[in-house]
Amino acid sequence: MSYQNVKTYFEQAGLADRITVRTQTGDTVEHAAETIGCTQAEIAKAITFLVDGKPVMIVTAGDTRVNSSKFKQYFHQKPGMVPRERVEELIGHRPGAVCPFAVNEGVEIYLDISLKRFSTVHTAGGIDTATIQLDLAELETHSHAAGWVDVCKGWTVNERTVQSA
Image (cartoon, rainbow, N blue to C red; front, side, top):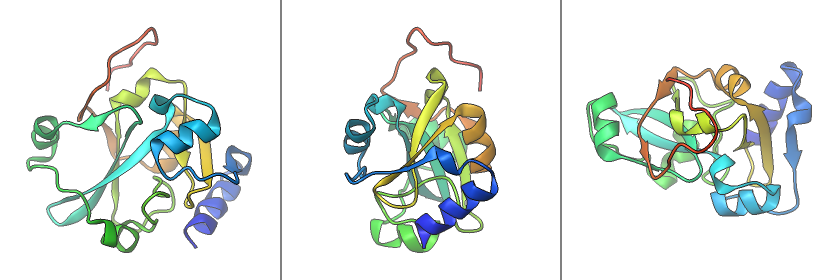
């Protein structure tokens, strides 16, 4: 059902051609990058947390990790991930297929500035064999992001321009 919801959303948005279903799994950043033929950094991974008991998703570049102190500075508490067994219930997608589209009502979505190094990124698509390629403006629009945050570490600015958050 998760994939069908994502597919329906993108069909209605006129972007169904952005979804690619492959035979190989993309359940991890490494697998997705290998299958797509891009760098791991260009994978937009969706990480889910509980903030004040409510689900929050942060979409980051695939080569990053959430920095606890940056997270706490923004969300005013330490990061606590949604338990794996509750991801589908709270977010609407299974682990390995979580994407920022067609999520359950009430899930706040934020985009990390680590993504701004790229003109296009690849997200999961509701199943572990589907991916979606979008430019950053499309990602921001179709994820219904609450905004941009700077909560990650492990990446550096390369030759591409990072726009201000």
